Length: 489
Image (cartoon, rainbow, N blue to C red):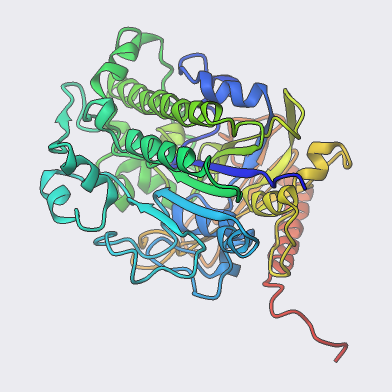
């Protein structure tokens, strides 16, 4: 009997789609991710189900939509009855491990007590660290449960960041050999090398915190960009473009929204914008270098051919585009479109590039089909294997994203918004909003940068009607399929 494939599931945090060399970025140095794409399948239009962490992570780990899992907001916890892919595979004989972040439960004010509140997630090897500590005091406080802090302590390292002279929005991080991402790679390598001596297949989730803010790359990686700072493009923003967009975005631009009080776009210099982008890209360069270490371990231990490598991010980062930094109830491509690469030398063709629309909710059923495991009835995503194999020409007519009170309150209440994107149009509706413009409509053929809101444009009435119909269809068809119907009545 042929050994079932291993799964190396790599997830970056807050990495937008256009930040990898193979996705067209000429500045970053990402040879390892580029090599994965060249030897596997790369998806040009992959969309997260939410622009923030917990809803997205719960979704791709279960193959179910955020409102279905009920882990639909940061600060909320996934219910105990949800079945994660590592649990399903553990039941099928896999050894499942976790390195780094998980974030499918409340993680504030202290994300440092995961053990007593874990659901039956299937991870029997659990090396957890939600994030690097914000400062040395926090590093000392959280060491009993944060594996990264333990790793630093064992080396006698004090975690500290230094201010950057050009902007308060960038800090100089610890040296690369002491970074959280480096710890992730070293710990993942240990798992890979250990499992090489056992016959059973394995799944390893490696959940990096980079390139999530604070933007704090090692000095040596940032300096490469500072030498060519004037070449780095400014954020994609047209003055006045927010005038007919929802009030939430206008307030974020002006610094009045809680997520942006320290990132006031209009008060930042061009140099500051460029330094932030440089720091973000430097963090991605480091991420790629450390991913390379894990891939080297697969090769060295003779497991590469039989290991499916998956790489994606949980969501994106606005990075100043449209006058907005970080994330929130925004559905521009920089916020919800992510890189997605699948590589499996024994099974998948090399150099395949898929331009059609796919969702991260599709990753879970893809994994199950690839390893020959049963698809459980609660799963809502669609396996990508028929698309990869050429059994179908198209996978989805549209993609669907949600934001249901997923972040901090706006004007004292939660924000509820949904998005549908078809091949040509994107629509966003802010539900229950009584102030200002209630939605966005973009013609992606004429306006791929999503600068001109056609919501109130009479010339787009037919397109708006069609997209609203698609949205109601997606909201109806993503209702929880559980419990399974037992009979006709």
